[in-house]
Length: 95
Image 1 (cartoon, rainbow, N blue to C red):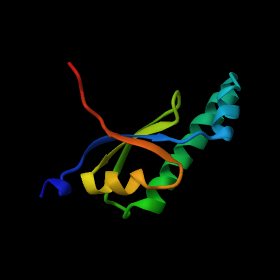
Image 2 (tube, rainbow, N blue to C red; image 1 turned 120 degrees about the vertical axis):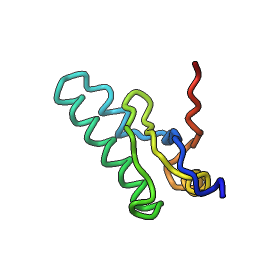
Image 3 (tube, rainbow, N blue to C red; image 1 turned 90 degrees about the vertical axis):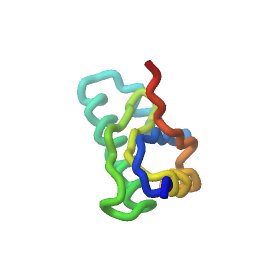
Image 4 (cartoon, one colour; image 1 turned 90 degrees about the horizontal axis):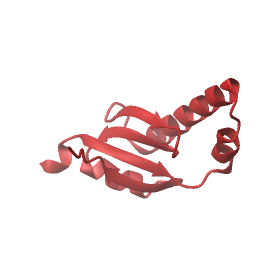
């Protein structure tokens, strides 16, 4: 039953030369294009890997090409084998 409980995970992506190129553009337009690129890229990996409506993307992280998503343990395992994904880790809050 635990595998049906949604929890927060962070998905780190593999090296992407386009991300690196966009990240090096320090202009306002460059920052906008990087945000848009990563949001679309992260949305696409979720849409092509997981069942629609079964997850909730919380945010994309520009600094490390990663995103936070609410998913089940089973879905995390599916994402771990997706092309372009480097690491999937449960987001543990530390106080």
